[in-house]
Length: 364
Image (tube, rainbow, N blue to C red; front, top):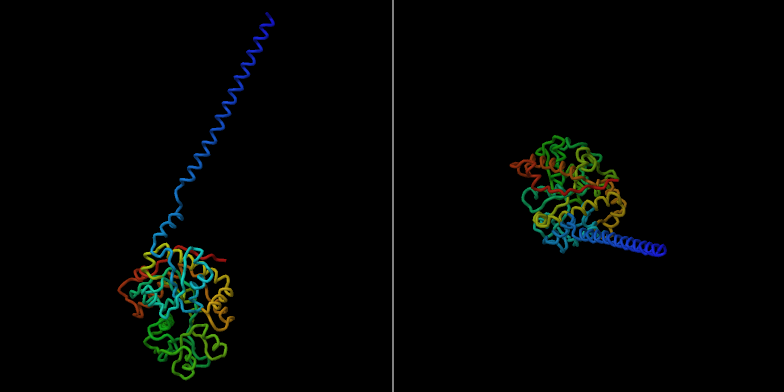
């Protein structure tokens, strides 16, 4: 009897152990399933995530008329205006997915205004008046400061703009163009009435001889052209966009877009502007390399070391704030001279031509 009871006890114990083992196995299976389900849900969530702003902009960009087409850059050489060509040569536009074609143009105003090119760079003194007067262009960034000054004979009787009353200022690019506008601002800042001064067109290459012959008593020249004659003791600087306190923070040249192009292709225009800021930073920090690239592409000529000195004399990292301030000042001056309409406020005129993008330079 006792033996039977023991056998039954052993059987019951085995049954209890089997049940316990089975329960444990079932619980493990439930635990195994939980993380698998969680993982599947996580993968579904990440696959269906909302597109980022960058993704949305890229998709919108593909719908613009200019998408996939080469952007035409109007350029005819020169250190100051070489930014877009340099960016093209260095592949910076390619990095943004933009193809470019550098087009040699005679008149940048005509080329940009008629849409023959999409982008160009030139003196504010060249582009601002046509832009205000209805040429189809707008500005989104500045290129650099400085580059032109007012020169007189080194040993002559002229030592300041005040001495130019009743005298003649030579203008290599003619009446009504950039040199004329620059000279007017020099006089205006010194409280000299432009009506008290004569303005004469003069061939740039003959300007020094014209000074020596007394045909003119001052001339607006690029600092690069003038340096040789300054070093020879023939001429001296009496007013400068590059070095004078009231002008040295102003941009000299500015990037102009065809306005219709920029309006129809806002994302393309934004990407181009991003590249322009990037190439300006590159130039500022790699002057010799940038100058060499300009020479390699026949976009600059003359003495390489002199070109490097000129490039170093400019500030290539002009901020939007600096540009806006300069454009206001120039518009005010031009309204006073009567070269642009005074029917609109400076703010209204600025709003028509200045449409900056929100980019900043990487200062070092």
